[in-house]
Image (cartoon, rainbow, N blue to C red; front, top):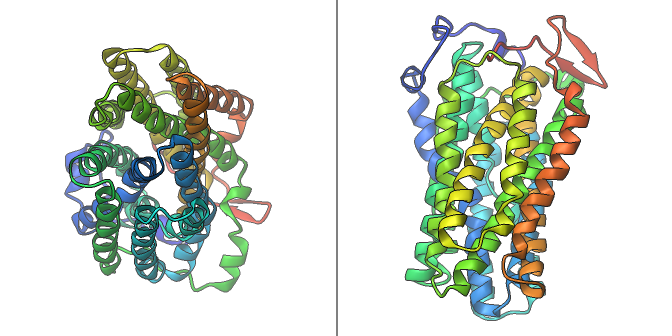
Length: 430
């Protein structure tokens, strides 16, 4: 993406100091990428849970189910940043079109292997292309907002709106996956995920008018080295790894808990309550005109997340888990929103899609590690032992975040180059 794009004024730069969601959604061209983008986002919300439920059905083991889902998540986390970098360099459509085709075929192949009771190693092998080809729609939508809005104050609202949209998928996705897998067929969730990815991804790729322009300047591409070289991005990656541990740990542990009760359908409801708390707090967070520094908000919000996640293992009833899950979800959205907002001041426009994919990949990697460990704990220890994973993940991430919080400060107004990465002036977002 050309770094000059975000420095040009747009028709929306006259936004008021407290812009709202209504004004954001009236932005010309926004709905043309928002609607198909929502459908294509479902893999991140449906893939892990659909795999866990399918493989658990065919093997009888949460450990095997968690390991298979983890292989997919690790593959996604490793390939997502390269997908983002390729999108910055060659254009979103060029990367997305073949990607969704590969993902749909890989997911369907994985479904066939699981149903035929193929050896576990074949599922691991199929998990690699399935995870690697998960379309990075969230980062791509965030990059399109940057082109559409420029330096408008609406960018802060857009960051909150995208977090809310992400969390809405985590309300719809798990409920849909659970309903399909338990009410239709154990493979129905993964088949539906592949179909939504294909249709939504191709429609999103077709919207060329809002796609960020490709940077044809070879010298600029060399100067814009990996976004991971920015120290603040590395600090955010650590925080997002911890958030991923919450998603993964809760997916496996809630599935095991409801299975032990003989009510597997409750899994989607409990996870939906967790995601609903996330979404609702995201709506509120985006509507507030914050006065405090985003770095401070991130640390304080993350401390609240670690505290609530640490209590999950002690809950032994549906009501207790629903209440705690709601609180945990309410603590995640502010951390996600603030983290994505900080990227605007840390990373130049030409590397921003890649930066967003590093954060998305960190969530996937944390989720992959969490489902593996939580699955083993549920199989080998007591019921509910998997809830120790969100506690450990968030506490470790909080300690790292506190130690590295000084690296989250936005760059000064003067343009500097650090370790090969150019940084433009920070955009006011508070």
